[in-house]
Length: 434
Image (cartoon, rainbow, N blue to C red; front, side, top):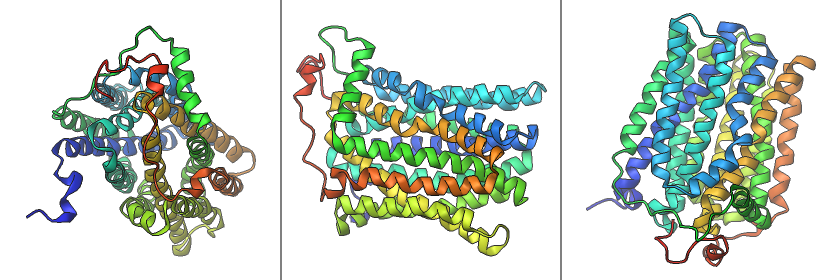
């Protein structure tokens, strides 16, 4: 007899294929996220401003392309989009060691590569979040999102450490070759999914891209819960990218850490993300949905203060850095599981791509701005003072949710209204729901 522990989605082979493909992709993305900045720091001696520009290029597509990608995702099957986005990311990442071997690699090329990888990352992320509710039942969303977040957390644990070790051993460009292979493995896993994906809703008349984007944004801003969690995420992510940009330079320049040590601190700190993914369901049962989300956000918004408060070098300081990133991981991962599941439950199926994209636009759009702000302040006022400014900024993110209906929710609502499908130009009964 199958143990209850391994029931549910553990027995759903099609979900397991998605889970494995997405997990390998996440590991590759984590290696890239640290390997590209380390390539800039150690190979081109990048300044704080240049590193800010590189990180801004990585996340600029969340500001410039997300809304258009959301419309595209709603008009197409999502699984093929995920497959093609990973093929593209693999080719782009693999081009870096090729350029290095030909001695034509430049920091400008890293900017362009980071930008294009960012576009495909937006496409993959919006597609898989919109694909999940069509692959599993709505009552399984918490379990599904928890499992996806758990492996994302494992990637955060292993990815930076692996990236640091590979960069120290092989140099950053060559380390990216292993990352390119990870996307090949991910594509192979996604290609084995056999559960039919419902066709996208067919419109009676052609709806302009602008009107389609407006429909998604209306849902985001008119629903107080969706609006609050998107704005909180945007504020948090702006501060997070500033923190990450400056901490890498602070650790490398002022604390004399090598790439392996930086990767190890970030990786070990991300153990908290795995704890958060495992414990999200338990905390919701104990506190209720709203109180759980508030507790999670208090933890991840207060923890960054430990980074500038650490004396600098030594065992105590290293412990404070690890604790800060671990608490950020626990709180942010738990809250992400809960608010993404909430958004998936209350959003009509035909709007999922655009609402997910709209939330990504608001939540991830500030990332390049955070990188630029962090890089600029690091050059102007110094790295450690910038860490203090950033740490206090995190506390403002909490207020969006504290004063929203999310804080008063005891559980998920029953489900989304279905009437808006006709209003959007979809033909009722034209095909299975997405």
